[in-house]
Length: 82
Image (cartoon, rainbow, N blue to C red; front, side):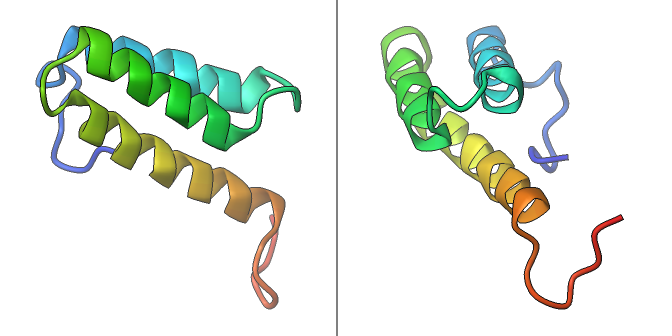
């Protein structure tokens, strides 16, 4: 959903696992770690263990996830929550 035009098989294994861990932490990690901190840590891991493009890719995907989660928690006025 957040990685348009990217099949899971096309993603680098390291990137895919970084995304899995970060999304899990944002969804079920409680409120101890703010999403921006989770994203920053994921970017640092991607820089260390991924390819040259990994940090930008991980940042882009996780920022879209963060925005979507924020929209679900704080919908704009006029948006219906179902």
